[in-house]
Length: 505
Ligand SMILES: NC(=O)C1=CN([C@@H]2O[C@H](COP(=O)(O)OP(=O)(O)OC[C@H]3O[C@@H](n4cnc5c(N)ncnc54)[C@H](OP(=O)(O)O)[C@@H]3O)[C@@H](O)[C@H]2O)C=CC1
Ligand SMILES: O=C(CO)[C@H](O)[C@H](O)COP(=O)(O)O
Image (cartoon, rainbow, N blue to C red; front, side, top):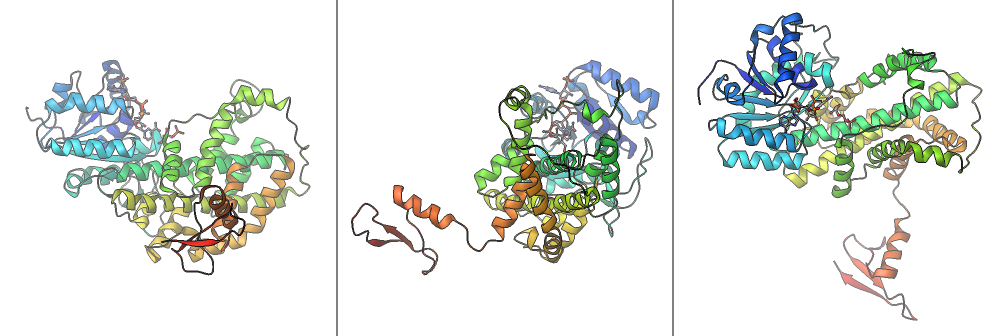
């Protein structure tokens, strides 16, 4: 195949692809672009002509073969197309046009098992493949996303300069994102929010867990808003101010910041605040569900993350809930007299639950790495989440510090900083969950995170009875507290004298 001059190629010019192409061009690379539907390419180029200083470095093609020919070898081709069948279709069309050694980078939200399969198949056919998580939405793709690549070290060497250039940048000491990028003027300096996560599907797995954490973070914030609204009697504009204050402290994060902005938005087509008119039915595209399913498969108690997925599912049953609300009764909501205290207590509850949510996400990755033969560096993962991605937060610096102190930390909650924060905040957290329960306000994320905290810190749980029940009806055996672990016993429950036998190890 002919060899062109473009440094990089990109396929898929929907919101993510357009913005990443511009980001790459702003960093001085010449980039060939292609989209299945050429009309989208035409509209994109028209926009570039109007408004983009780097337009001269963007080379559109109407035909896939022409696009491939425009790229210098070994080619680096980024896919930002609909995950799943769309990605396989594009790879299938590309392969006959490529040369051995060319690199395909899938930046979509792919399922990690698909990425493992694609990497194996492409490697066997002599091509290179990287599955890279991309986070930050439209603005991140444009001015600096967090990038989580998975693939071989050899493939990474080809991609690394581009990924390091376009990734979000943070101040290495404080972890604060470097702001101020504009079209044609990317930020300079700072530490890039990207690193090779591991081989094959590791990058996409970590991106999936990022999204699982995103789900629970958003659900916790939404529950906090709901409590301030119903128990505190605060209107959206007042809650926006509360979140603005919180964004100055330990809760400071992109999601808190956008929440404040959303809450202060007036309805553009009516009276009052927009948030009060947005239908309470949340969508989802699958990454949260994959995270919860993976946690179940791995046997990792990521109950709060799963609750966040279920909470979206329950919200989507809007008509059924409306019908049920006329039949099923709960308590009358009693307003809290001391709004200042309520705000403080909710802030502490949110922070404590957030610690648990991240602890669950990191425990899940720690388990998955054993299953898939990866060696994940959790300090690095936290480091590259400090900027660019949806869950970026001041908090991520604390997680980086925790895993830097102890790379083998078994649970984030055990790190001294987070342990002390949980100890400080738990009284308020319990108070808030009790208040919510007493008033019939659903707080699945705040309460399941608390159950996780209490379960994890319990030396003994009622599973003694549960295991005895299993032995009773299914001869599933039990271990004894007065014998070493790994020795199993069975009681002959139906026998009149109920003898106990040791069944082996
Ligand atoms: N939106 C977001 O905030 C984020 C998205 N992502 C991921 O990035 C990827 C791109 O996302 P987004 O920009 O939102 O776009 P979409 O996920 O909506 O995908 C649309 C793009 O995929 C192309 N496409 C779909 N099916 C095919 C096919 N069979 N063959 C060729 N092209 C196809 C479309 O081409 P056409 O115009 O011809 O239909 C279009 O360019 C997705 O995998 C998404 O999961 C990752 C992080 C954030
Ligand atoms: O990856 C993303 C952000 O990190 C995408 O915005 C994704 O679509 C979010 O998931 P969902 O649509 O299920 O809310």
